[in-house]
Each structure stands twice: as C-alpha cells, then as structure tokens.
Length: 209
Image (cartoon, rainbow, N blue to C red; front, side, top):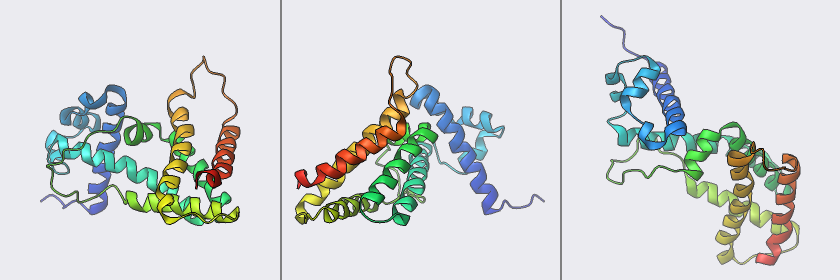
C-alpha cells in the first residue's frame, strides 16, 4: 500500500511545478503554461499536477501568488528591521532592486508582464499576500522621511506620497530587470543609481506635500 505523501513533499512538488511554469512563462509567455509541458519538466504524470491545480487558470493564479510572495518575503523583513526614515528608505530601495536583479522572472511576472487572473475562480487558498500592508509600509516610510525633515504631511497626501516612492524605486528596479545587460547602454554603477534615486525621493518628498 503506498505511503501517504507528507505536507512537505506535496509542497515540494507544487513549488517545483511553479518554478517550471516560471521558466516556461519567461521563455514563451502565457502560451507556454501547459500542464503537460510542466509535467514533462518535472518528470511526473500530468495527473499529479491536477492534484495541486484544478486547471490552467488555477495554475496561473498560483504562479502570480508564488512570485509576489517571493517579493514580499524579500522586501518586507528588510523594511521592518531597518532604522526609521531615510535609512529605511535606503534599505527598501536596495531590497527592491536586489529582488529585480536576483529574481528577474518573478519581477517581470509581478510588475512588467502580469497575468490577468480569472475573476470567476473561487477564493485562493494560498493568497499572494496583503498588498495593502505593503502600501501602508510605503506610507510609513514617506511619513518618517518627512518627519526627519521637519515636515508634517496631511493624511490625505499619504497615499500619493507612498505611490510616488514606489514609482521611483520601481523605475530603478525595472531598468535592472530589463535593460541592465543591454550593450548599447553605458550604465552608472548600480549602487550610485540607487543612492541617487533615494536622494531624489527623500529630498523631493517635502515639495510634494
């Protein structure tokens, strides 16, 4: 009689399937996300995948969640551990860009070429993460940076300030993920680009209040 699979083994198969799906999506886009091809990459029967994903739509949603979870796991602990204000902004900037550099597949999937998830699917048993928490963290960083400079922002400006920080950091990270190895572009050192963006955002926040 076959031994029942433990939760760790089940999770391993699921994560390996999502890694294979990420490779296919990165190489071929959405058309590459075929259950049979993923099963072939894993060396398992296609029926094994259907034990984890009811179909392609659920696989796509799980893939988006998987990539976003990696992003949050990389950035949020750094944000929580850093000193407040400019130091936290600097730490988040480096973590954001490091994620784009070290996990370009996941970065592109989450931010540059997202999959439109089927809205008719039932609730996700493993949701991607709380995007509101990430935005609240951005607002807190903006508030801390302003407080360090003696500025008290009105509450109704915090959302746009948080999104402005996001836009600036995302710009640096997106260029790293897409064009950092372009032979036709002479890039300044990455640390210098990050530091310059942090300076622009930090010094520019008071003018945006």
